[in-house]
Length: 126
Image 1 (cartoon, rainbow, N blue to C red):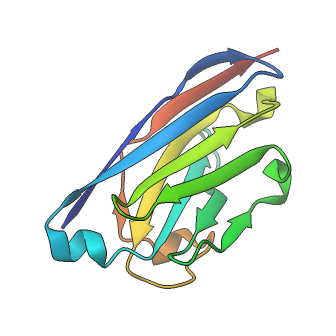
Image 2 (cartoon, helix red, strand yellow):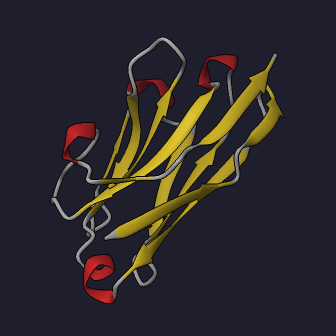
């Protein structure tokens, strides 16, 4: 089993930056088996949407709404995940979730992710 814990959320003015982090915990085999890692977000009353994902070889996928503003990265040794968010907009306000899976190339398909964190709130004020 894998536990996923996000951190770094908070309140920020529009146009500002914020960096999210995600740590994974579990037995060595389970952690080493992680391939795809991703960030998702959800606003109350709306469906969860994929924000950015990265596979074990560094291949990345971004939602069109965040391209050029957000950068996803990972520490493969620790299987930690990061999301650098720049030029934040009010529409980026949401609960952000980190998710991981053994599946290769899961991209932004949330159904392919097995392990989810509890989420960290990001609020952007204009």
